[in-house]
Picture (cartoon, rainbow, N blue to C red):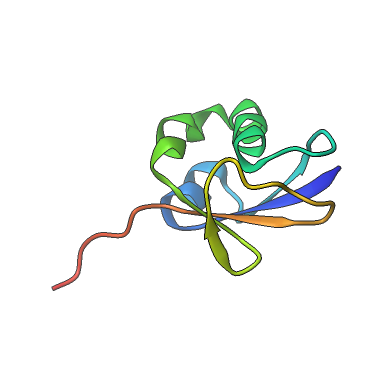
Length: 82
């Protein structure tokens, strides 16, 4: 099954792209997608435990089921500002 991973901020800089296409097994969940992403982009691994996941306009956890064509958004922690 094909899905897209959308990367933001530091994750995008590390991967060198804002979108990663992944092939995951049918009935895969978000956690399995993160594992596949870390295989394609090992430099992202140290950051994946701290990201927020968003799917279909909602925050989700790693157990969230994925469907063909889904976009899973990885949102790193936000800090800074005044």
